[in-house]
Image 1: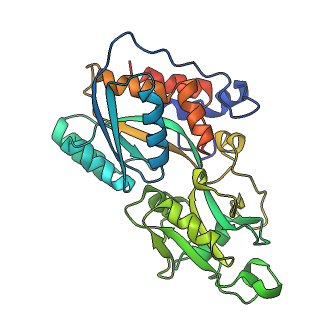
Image 2: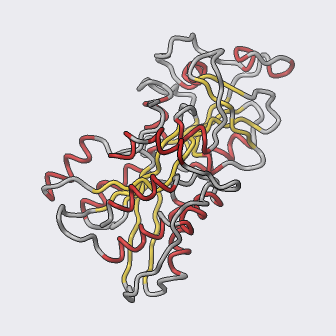
Length: 325
């Protein structure tokens, strides 16, 4: 089991075996997922979603899809960063806490101190955290050692600092051009995940241009041919390209696709999560349960694929559905 993909709870232990027996749809990987079956109950109410910017589009699209089945339910979405989800759940201002990273120990401890139990974590889909360059940049691949040397001032992966494109092997007008770096701000789960897994918990350079949202990162890279940045693969546009990644310089590189994320070969694969408040032994609120059931259905995962992220294989979706019962 490679450490790149950190699926939650029992799903992690069986990830590789499940992938070996999962038939991926030729188009989007949703072929074997269970179709959504609307419950007979007429649902009404409001769900507030507060958390990840990376998941902002997804949560909005899921809300729109869910509304076609349940017109009496309104889902309000606010995406200002994963760090806003735990306090919103704890304070009761949100029923859904989307996060692009797992909750930190102190966040779980704070929640548990108030309620006496931990929040329920649901893996909703997969994401390849991508390293983007301008579409005209001749670079096609990069190692995490080089990524660390570009973005970090602590260089925990061992390479000396990389300041110019020439240090990455490019020639011509790229050779002496300084690398312009775009990233997320510290409220972002993507920032935290990249810091932990790409930089080995090292520090970012002060020269990294911190952006409040993923779309701003991609836009910055798209407008500067000497730029590099990171965000979820779902924010990819035609004006940027995602680099193939390897762990070490000169190592085997992997595309940011479904197969490489499920197998764990892509080194920056991750879950996109939703946390909810559910007391052990008690039923989940019917509206929350129905919404998450839709998210994990064929229809919900088709939305994932259309938004540029990676759907859960059927067996893993089934594992997450069991948590809702």
